[in-house]
Image (cartoon, rainbow, N blue to C red; front, top):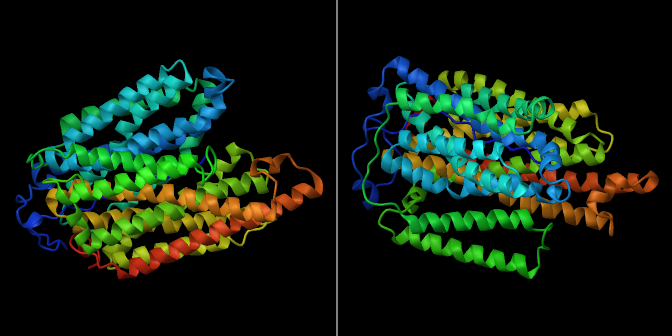
Length: 525
């Protein structure tokens, strides 16, 4: 089961009247209301720092929940459905991901219209309701449905928190807050499965959901009592049709990547029909965004070079990251015989790399290192790490694999958080929410497409090397047949790593074209 890492929430400041943006003047932007006063002007310094701490705790809650469930799948199946539970396990993850992704554009628009504080409170409350229901589930069907409820809140847990941190950031401060975000995201990625395993082994799998309640209630109370944020524009109505089309498109795309090559063949009528419907919905969504009076994802944002390139970069990073994490786990389990639980521990070096670079990068940018240089360095590190992984063989030292994952963590830690910072700095103040959640939306879609493309590459390469042998059957082979199959699998997964390295090379080329503006430039001086 793949372990994913959400984007690190930076604390870049939103553009203000004194902060120029890279927005090209349009009718939409020129008619926009004057930016609201930043949160730094509405709150005392102590309140603002406490608000930042609340945001970091919320990130912990989000990161842990994304990783903690993977360690408890066996006891969940044993308790709720020992006969058919294994077949339904993918939906335990997919239900959360589908619900969280589908609502991302809507969350951004709600933040812009009604203020990030109200939306954050609603998202945390929904997440806690879903967590309580998951802990009380009495069947796999109920648990999957309640995971969707939890995902509705979880989609806002990380994305809305990024908006809040951007508003809490003092515009006069340098750096992007990547240090604290790196520690939290890297640490949560490393300890999530471990905490999940401990709770499942010594208490009950239900506590992987119940543990959210005290943390979430503390965040909820703190948000109500501490946060003083801009109230939002409150103008016009929500584009519910646009939000529905965005949700339908995201759901269709994620289902294609989930079902393709596994539940249905890539050329099956079911998958081709779903793909055609998804393309049609996407076209209708674009038409709606071009004609709606107040669209949920304004196309005018794509006229801003920093945002347009930032979205593209985030999608490519999501694809490359998926090509790394998922297939490193497969390599360890199939080629090296590492148990699934132990394979997760190999992500520790990557988490350490993200944590350390999060501490270092802010200091470097404060001393004059440009954000573009940071992004380029992150792309080079990531591409190099994936290239080295692509040279792995059946007997490659596992310590060398750990070192390569450490380098990959250093690269990803420089890319994810600072891309968000660049997009936030370039966004018009009244569109900060949709720009911020758009970054997360494109990363999720990029990850889904990466999973589909790399999965197809792996399947075709392995089938060409081992015709008639199922990938899942490699572990049951013995003797020369197993050695031959493992060699074929390693060659196939090496092709995936090299392809992911090529994706990161594209990230480097795009990063060199980026010209950060606004708050990002303040970090370059």
